[in-house]
Length: 354
Ligand code: HEC
Ligand SMILES: [Cu+2]
Image 1 (cartoon, rainbow, N blue to C red):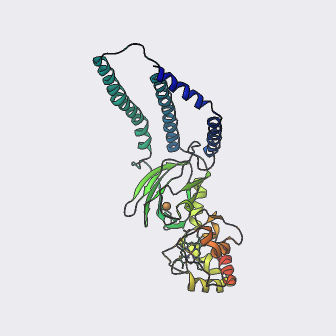
Image 2: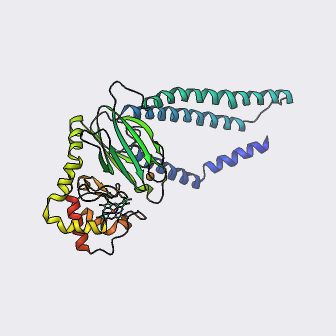
Image 3: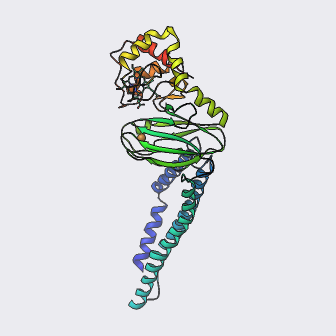
């Protein structure tokens, strides 16, 4: 008993030591700072659609439950320090131990997991691509190291293909068919709902909905190599009519007219054929097939999958510095190409904006 009391007094003197208070202060500050991550265009706590609201509910339920568990465990821990006056017989000890094993080791986990299933299963159900009266829009998203290919197979007038930007109709469910081109990536728009793996050789499906027109951030959510952190996706929900106009402007025929129309860019087009065409598609100019399509690159919000914002001169800047801006990305440096040529290429590509 005396030993136990001295343990308690050691603990108390430790808890009140200056160092302990300093560390507690530091941890508290870090905790407060981490709360800053609770808002913004990638916050699961700020849902913008039904699937994401389910995810938030489960998150709060789990946080609440975990808090209760923490409090109960702490209380039991303190209770264990309490000096005991009665001695128990071995039979009593065994009975108490059995109660803890059956109650705490079997009944409690079963109850917890059942409760979580009751929340989790309906939420997962709503994200399944079950048949609907009016089939939803299908958008295919393919993860590459380290950029996104986005396809609209249902577009009227032929499939539309773009990269590093995803535009979807707002106020209606959309089915995303996702896969990976090289390694495993994951598709995750936190404000719209749960993430889903993008596997090579398999198509995974998830149904998401954006309630209102808005812009959302998205991020590859599966470590996929050095460029993983730099694999972001600009997601934009538009009213149905604007979405359709956006698709029409990106039809192959409209884009090829845009890319070959202006004679001032003849030199840039020649340079493109020499240095870039084997990897990049530009409608009416090249087939590409390795890197992101550039047919509509001038209309993108960012370059390099979220690395720099698109503005005047951005493409030339990207071409000169892309290995510093996004180290290890799969485009070769263009150090063998004159800066003037890169500037001309940049000006032409920026003009490719539907
Ligand atoms: C070996 C294939 C290859 C060649 C050659 C190549 N690129 Fe790329 N390019 C890529 C890849 C891969 C990416 C994606 C890099 C990333 O973001 O991870 C890319 C990205 C880009 C982007 C950014 C697109 C976006 O939406 O973020 C532009 C612009 C671009 N390349 C232009 C060019 C130009 C101009 C040339 C010729 C001077 C060229 N590329 C040559 C493979 C290539
Ligand atoms: Cu990835």
